[in-house]
Length: 142
Image (cartoon, rainbow, N blue to C red; front, top):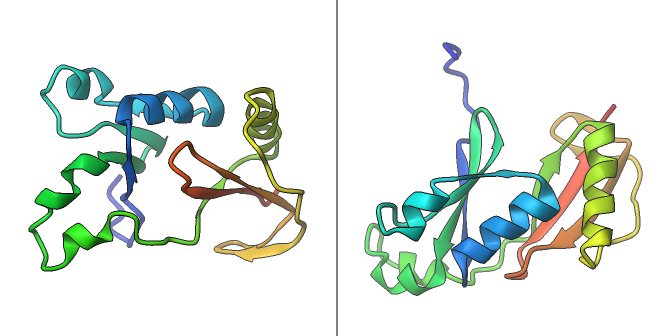
């Protein structure tokens, strides 16, 4: 991509078990793992999952929080409350995600309609949690 407009590159989540988290995001959410084998054999400090061609979610081991010295106070960010992260999907992908989560016994919220987001009012949305308690919203606009 040659366009240099601002984009969301990645989000870092603190997780207890990065391999298990990657499995959750792959199986329940449908996001492909990135660098999972490299993490598992010690060649990468954390794995990620791919949201799209330009955005990933890093699954940072909570055990590394104490080593965060890049910015004063950064180690204290582990467990810092973030309200939620929102995934925008097509209508079919939205329905498939909700079904996978329900089949996997992952609690989901009721459907909401016309909630505001980056592209205006979303037709439908719902919330769910990952195994570490991080809250996600799934929505679609079409």
